[in-house]
Length: 484
Picture 1: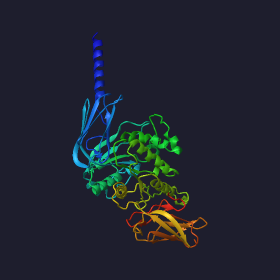
Picture 2 (picture 1 turned 90 degrees about the horizontal axis):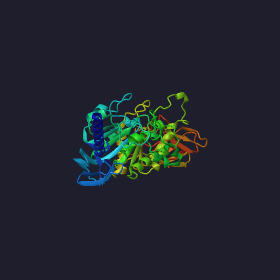
Picture 3 (picture 1 turned 90 degrees about the vertical axis):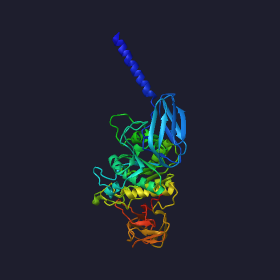
Picture 4 (picture 1 turned 120 degrees about the vertical axis):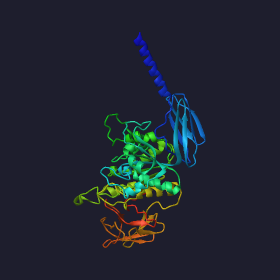
């Protein structure tokens, strides 16, 4: 009899514990002390509680009340919040209460991609630190920039919450180092913070060596018929390859979806080099993220992969089989064809062609910030380099017209223009002489009397010098492969 009552008591305790757990109010871990909430747009707040429980969310003179559904999920939406450097408190009250403190309101950006986005300011195993790393870290005391990092994880189906992460914390030398936070994202955020005088929240979710497909949600693939097969369910096993479509999205992006952001930054592509449809896969990624965020076509700015000796055997190298120039065109095509996007050109930011992780991430962040300042924040600053627009033939010269050439073109190093080749009716490309004439470039070569095509920066080692008046480099191009 005694054992019966002991057992009954244990069951009662277990039942009581289960009821207590079910009644606990919880938020996703992306909501935390020290976070930044997005200014000037609706801010969803959601979480879990006991089914049917009343939940009240209070922040910045706003109070929203809702009831948890049958599965215990609840959601409210705060109205537009003004920018605020004053630390504030978010209170979520139900059967229990969650209080989050030291919250700012400003601009929030999500940064993702592979190893060049993942690369921190300082040390990274197998890599060189960024340029002036020690000085940059020493100066990185920006308490009104807050950083949050998603750690690496795979999942066969979308997760409701993150399992591995580094919580929100104010930006400092120590934080950047211990979190090993993205240098490109940090330098971007620093410029947004200092130029706009607003708090900035940066969320990094990246993984070196990964392809674009694992970062893409199923809805992104199904929206594009040629990619629909990639949306197949993933088998739940102990060893899911990180190349499997959707598995990084499931674990590292889906739990963030809905957290109010201004836009996204993307630095990836090396692992997809050789694809002939990367621009289409970019459309799937961007369209998929925008669909799940439910914020409309938010800004999406990305970085061109850099020159690098992908084929290190000079004896077997051929420009005609080099996959990099064509890949650059696909990236540029994505920037043209997908609404509210932009691309940073990096052909001038490589100090070692044997290093696939260029050290100059400050200029990468700067150019991403120029895109945001110009296109998102309406600051009317030059944000793009020359882009080929039209070819006209006059005698033995090919005359090239460019977009983003306001104020004229220039050689960024003061030397004659490099990396131009030209082809006549035989289709054979030869090195060409190129000269600037205002906002055009005239290209010619001895022996080519009737030009039919021009290439610029067409090779994996290309570090050319054509720029616009703002000093931004020209995109690689072939007049035979137009970017529409």
